[in-house]
Length: 508
Image 1 (spheres, rainbow, N blue to C red):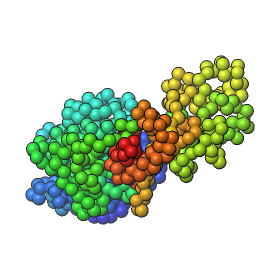
Image 2 (cartoon, rainbow, N blue to C red):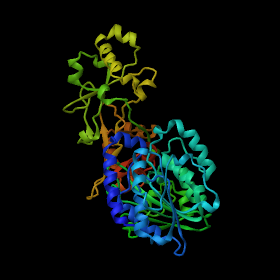
Image 3 (tube, rainbow, N blue to C red):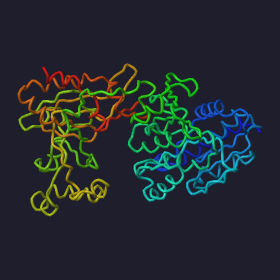
Image 4 (tube, helix red, strand yellow):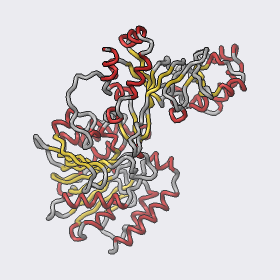
């Protein structure tokens, strides 16, 4: 059997099948095929850690067209592969792939793996390699409760309702593994930092022996069509030993990484953000002040449809809409090239194009009576479906924004770092009444800091300088990273950033 020729056919087939689906369809199903070079890297490492004299009993619960199976046959000697089984839920990929591999010994099942009954002990697998579907939680709403029960029963994993399908796949596959079997899971690295990843981390620490987590450089996106930062998680189906360590590797290939560090399980049980390894040291216990000591931090408003709700002054005037039912709002960070905003006499930010967000608290019948032009505009929103969008339809008044007062200090919520070490986040001093969208975080000074600023009017400029002197590393250590080097900071993460310079300012 010439597997090199079959792999050439498989790649052509993958491209053809992908082209027949829209990006949205594949996003909903979480269908991002594993590149052949990455598949070979994964299987090469699997061979390096697999017991030399054992026969391979291979399982891929999310088979697709079979990039891992192809790599398995390229890396392992054919005579060492005793069994190979794959499951694929989507007939669009399953039927052509099953036909492709029909001349091999593959057991290919076109079925939903999460509904399968685990095999008896003698029929379990000792090598599980999988790139599970990256399906966001909101696309599995009707299946969540059933999947939660299965994950708890299969792996003692208490999965959050915000978790993606890949977390359930990992749990449900557990009873398919032989004792001492090896697993390699190619999954989004976000599980290392986000709250819903806690269940996965507890499983890896308490139910199996975690061997290695290799995280790819986020600027090297593994999947061309998914903005996902990837990791390969390796473990053995064996109870963990006391005082064990886990190898964390970063960049390069799994066996030839750019950085590596062994981290004890005892440290991992305390550390919430595993992505700090191997590039950072163990977090030291510290009483140093944090931004939460001086600010209450919230995210900016989510309108539900920025194109409808956020208008320029010209658009408002052209439609004769009432400006008093709008609030000034800052543009997206990419269109804001300053760190300090001045205010005009009306409290509007001084900028070339002022933006305003509709924020009307009046019932629709009152709007019709008092502001007929605004009523007509809202009717357009109803006809075009804006009022039926998720955020809008769950509000008491669909065109009223959530309550957010303006603040002196904002921080960009998302940004990229570059080769020159550019900081992905920046702080902005806002002297106007402008609020911000959820592409910013809002820092509301607490009463202690307000008191200091009232005593020293110049303190706000010094605070801005101190905030922008916080190192990129200090902020990245608390945030999370996605594919393409995209970094994000949630409110609680920004709150945890050290604030030593601010303490010095107030002490002075």
